[in-house]
Length: 71
Image 1 (tube, one colour):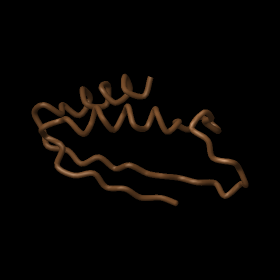
Image 2: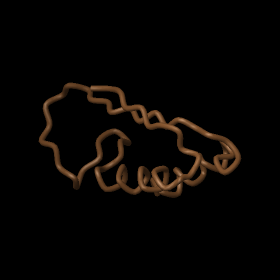
Image 3: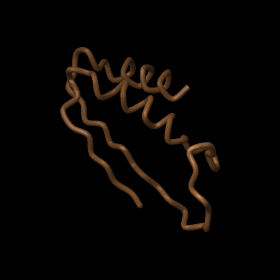
Image 4: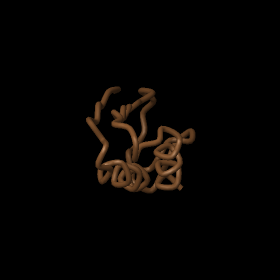
C-alpha cells in the first residue's frame, strides 16, 4: 500500500519530467511504547512499509535529494 502511494505521489508531481526533493518526516508522539516492526500506531507506517515506499523514490532518476526531519 505504501509503495502504491509512493507511485501515485510521483505521478502527481510529474517526477519523470521534474527534479524533486523528498521530505521524509520521522514523527514520534512520546507516548511510551515498545517499538516493533509488526505494529503501526494511529495510521503510521510500519518499518516495512517505509522501506517499500523509500525504495520506490530512491530509484527515480530525477530525485534531487532526500531531507529527513522529525523526532
